[in-house]
Length: 225
Image 1 (cartoon, rainbow, N blue to C red):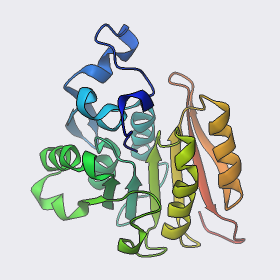
Image 2 (cartoon, helix red, strand yellow; image 1 turned 120 degrees about the horizontal axis):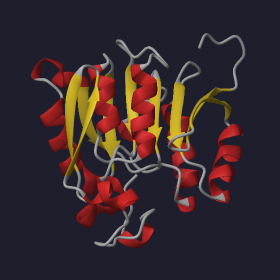
Image 3 (cartoon, rainbow, N blue to C red; image 1 turned 90 degrees about the vertical axis):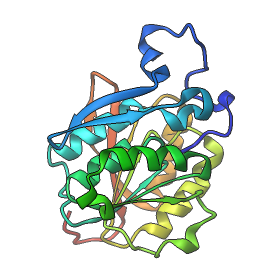
Image 4 (cartoon, rainbow, N blue to C red; image 1 turned 90 degrees about the horizontal axis):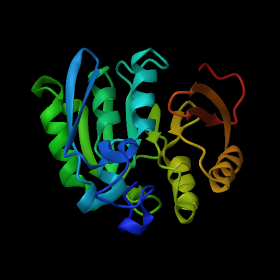
């Protein structure tokens, strides 16, 4: 999700950043998924956390490409998409994806989707504005098979709106996949809040990047995963 200002960034802006964060300051980054080379524009200086690719997105893309869940023909929505890498990969893997973020991030999103989704698949990747808890009337209740989010759990003041949004978008069959690092106690607090509405299980852990992937579904018995 887009941070309102640089003080909300996970890593403070600094031109002399250490090597581990220098990739965040590059104007673009390149990835290989779904048998394609994907070049993602980044703009840390202007948009902060919304405009760079975080490890959690890359790990979740890898999980999807490995067949962690079948996306072929599924209706998918990505929350807090930022640069759009995750939504782009989902579309390339056969999903119909609505890629969302707040208004300030949409131009960068549109640019990356247009540059990386082939013309014949372009109808499968739609960019749309979504501020959690505010724009829900524009989205069908329970209208998605899969909800994706990568590193969107970091601002405690957004937790209530995020949960409200997940609740609105989910049917009893919807699968939520959240990829994140558990950096702070508040991250654990969000998981506790999530478990109040959904059955939550960790389905993957990347020890190299310290990234967890959690799957959540409504607390309904006899569900086919």
